[in-house]
Length: 137
Image (cartoon, rainbow, N blue to C red; front, side, top):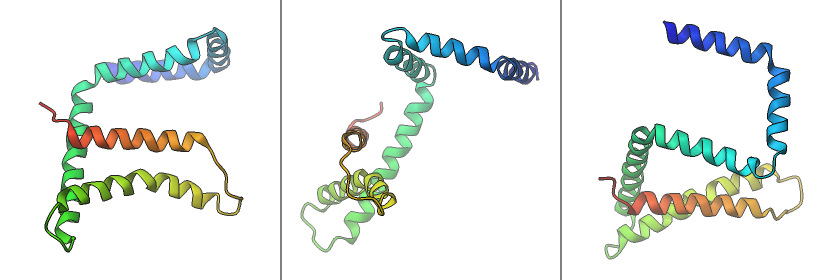
């Protein structure tokens, strides 16, 4: 109960002084290098603090990906190498789905090239490869 009261009081202070907090954050982000360092530091702290939960989530993602790859392998018409090919197809589809959705959302506009989309694709691909190959012991 005390934690809930503390959260409510902290939230009301933040809302009451939101203009001052906004100006402070703008001044903080004007310092050279903070825009890169601060998000990395905060993300690192979150990962360190919630490491067990993150590993638990990655384990369930790994189990889900292996289950999907096994199901896909079971419907393939050939026997040799079907697990590897099913894993490849699964990684290919999951990697390209977000980019395809973004392209269809911009359907009325002409084709555009945005290098950030391919960075997102590469990061999703790396996450999938690590999740499918690394064991959590």
